[in-house]
Length: 257
Image (cartoon, rainbow, N blue to C red):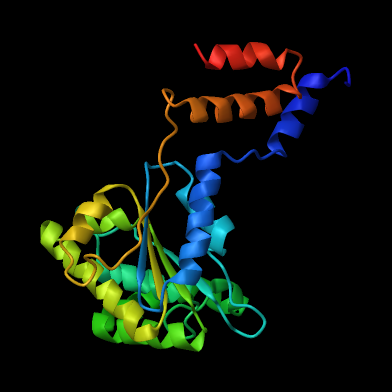
């Protein structure tokens, strides 16, 4: 070990990834479910916030926020974040549809700034916002549906989908939005993944087209009372302990107290 062992240990830890069995199990479930369901069907992925759902989707099915079309102009997987960015923190369906068009790199409504001439860059965003404002939401939705077919999209991932609960009108309105997403997926012939916290499950029960027609995948917290989780966590500590000047067993014993 080098004299400067702390910097060396930090560098090696940053380069190391040890996946917990719960994470790997949910990832395998997602991979299998994506291949098993039909076009137009829905997979809810639920779990606590900041627990690896987005990363799991990225690794399991290649769902990347900010992805770009391939050389053939295809985008097999589209990932959109459902942000409650409307006035007073409400969820705006029109703003969400604008995000969808941006995510799919629509040539008219969602052109990427990187594709613009440098002289156009500064004026493009305000012009796009004005265009979105003037265009009816129904037209934006139709443009997105057409773009899904044009891009050859097979999977549409809506991340942070629980934010739909903040739409004006409460839970019943949120359920109607979920219903409309299901109809969009069915019309465009794509598989729909809704990733979010547990609130999404209550909303799904209120959406008639979704009741009994989804395969829920759960990415739960690790439980300190379960022996399998304790063993798995001890294995993680043991793996990282090889980079430190301490005995792995002391770290493992500390984790079990």
